[in-house]
Length: 243
Image 1 (cartoon, helix red, strand yellow):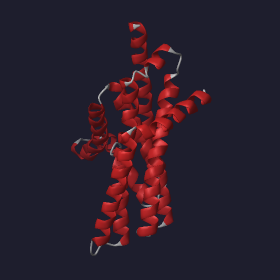
Image 2 (image 1 turned 30 degrees about the horizontal axis):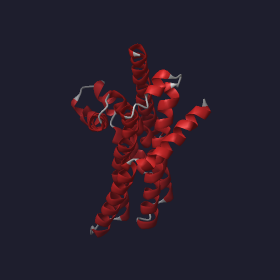
Image 3 (image 1 turned 90 degrees about the vertical axis):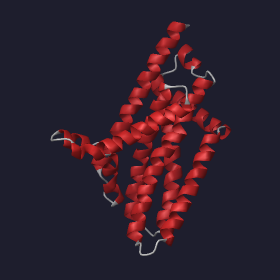
Image 4 (image 1 turned 90 degrees about the horizontal axis):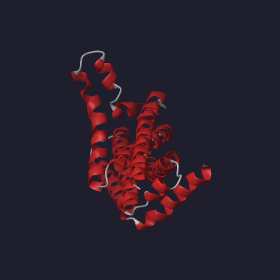
């Protein structure tokens, strides 16, 4: 099992240089972080505490969308070049296949974003180490959350554009749905407010290692992780029937 799992990860890493998506994503990330840093440093009357808070929320958004952008093309390219036929014909475990892809893009996204965040937060904004530490831990689970949603969206369609739209819609729906929870009466208000993702991340920005927030991103990521496996199993079953 582990041999096949790491073989899929190795294959993903080897094929990354042939795709323009990772390089494009990293370039956009670097430009975005540099731009926000310049704007924050030029802002008059802005304290380091406020600048750090803005930077953290900016990285929150970047982590969500970069995880989605990195993970979505993987399954789409597998479908486009008929690589999923190997999954349909041979006894490849869908759990290993999906998990290896999510693992790869979770840690790739987390490594790049965390490296950029540590450089800017510690070296430029002089943020307290304990806040940087909790945010880096939070970005790991946030990357898993966004990568799982990206992989799930890509299993539903053969179009990269449609997958981007679906994944972005899911991410926004979870946050906006929680934000609008105040419009509902109790107990629906308390239930929907739990799904306000940014609120789950806020304690981590204050140096608090919130188990509740970590569990939220892990559990939602695990839910879409499971849905991706189920969708692929259904597609494999249909593909075998069509053979």
